[in-house]
Length: 72
Image (cartoon, rainbow, N blue to C red; front, side):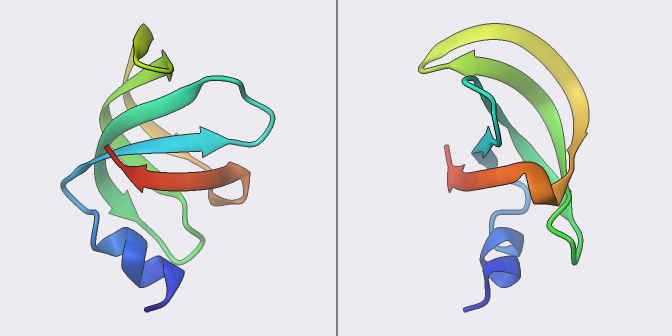
């Protein structure tokens, strides 16, 4: 399975995303993904471990800054 197909299988589910150069992770519901692996998340929040830092709401993450995507 191609990486883009794997990410598309997570649509509508909660995911945790690690970004380049960030010590915090982002958690949210994956609502959309495109061919560049840009991610659209709703109910997003910034977390450190299991501790919620702040609510972000709806966000778009640029695909070339994403290091890791995993189901929450």
